[in-house]
Image (tube, rainbow, N blue to C red; front, side):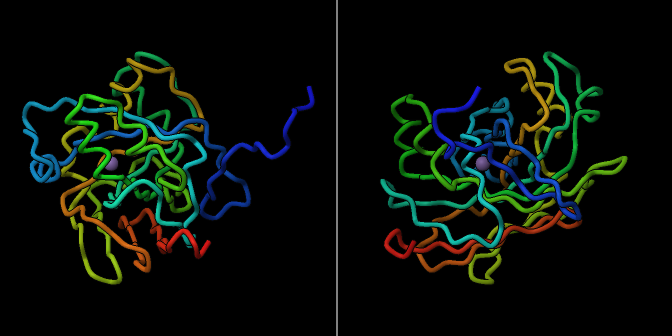
Length: 232
Ligand code: MN
């Protein structure tokens, strides 16, 4: 069937070393998955199960983009994260099956309107406007995983060349296999699903003019420049 609007397209992400694009079906995110970040947000890492939320698929933007500072916030925070890209999925599967579903990994930034998130937490409201806004998910090209994942790689983020976040993937509270297994209890996972796996400590606000660069050793890097809305 022909569609009413040809302006609606499937969002896609580049694949390292390939001409093919990775079609994005859904974006899931995990909150509070590094102890030091849970503490800096005022939570208790021992008592916190994984917190899931989502972003719209078209929130992805490629590395190298200039991004307009979002409307309706005075506190835009970066969060560098390991992102898992699925090639298959399922429902209610265990951690052993989870690793078979992974196509590859990327580096993502989970941009957050921290002021709206704090208000949502306080009032017990949904996080959608704090997390799922336009251009809130910059992503590096996806790197296909071989037999194993990135291992205990360094993950870090710089703002204008100044180191802000610096951790190891082994500091995650919930490993990737467990995140996927837990997520499959709530959703049928499929090829094209991206999962942001949480951020380490060191989050803070950025402003128009800032250049934000997130990296994971052996996976890649994503860099974006924030500009005022009038400059786009
Ligand atoms: Mn996050």
